Length: 356
Image (tube, rainbow, N blue to C red; front, top):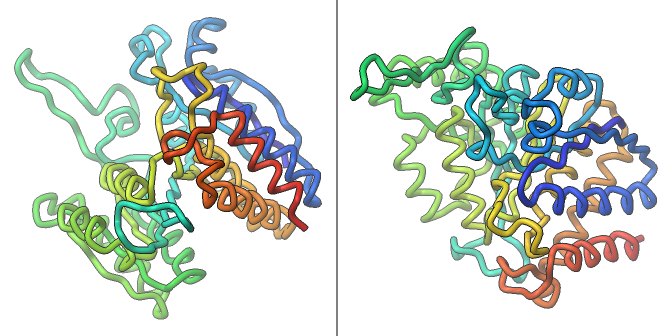
């Protein structure tokens, strides 16, 4: 499997280093081959090349099977016309990585904020929606017709809605066979109405999967009250972005949230959290999110190529992380422990090496 490594910004290089150590360890235990190519994106790219996201780097991504993408400090970038490009947005829109898959679940021996065990996956459509940096052929979807008025365009298409719905139902078939479609069609009558139309059409192809529909504000309350009621949650970009952070925090910490941006031919592993520049270089960041994202990327590749060894590698990583987190003595500070980034990583690697 050919992987392009982009450490990103802030704590990105630190947690990327941790993730690479885990991947190296699991490669020795499983029958997999990882061919790594290193590049830069974000602030380091801007310093070297005058842009945060080079076309040459994107070409290397397209030629790869997967991308390990560290957190991005988009708010610290220069303006768009002067080299500041949102790397995450470019990957999702230009490379058509339309399915942002974000699992959240409770952990053994780790108190969660929901007060009950749960296991759900939020399927986020990532190429359109309320995000103005990916809604127009040219220009921005956000503009000011006068100095006191700001406007933004929401884009919802049948194609994008159908794709994320189909991936959601396919996933639900392998789980508890339930899809929850989240919307605000009582207000966004046309855009969310179109989204729901496509979800319902896809549902007809999966008669063994239950479809339920929830208005987004009610969904937020229900997630807090009983997350165990949900299996696969399908939503447009903005709604899913917010709900996935909520679900991950309920599990114990946003630092536990694995995430991939998957298309039909390429998958990018990217931590769900941000770049946390305030703790950069202090060896206190929790690397779990990027480690689990890399695990999800291996599973995606294994399923796509019918190579069970990559799925086995993903299972080994997930088990090692779970064993590390279930022990209070091997947790990072955000989980109530005392370990630093490097020390936590050594525990994960140790569990991989000790497993049969």
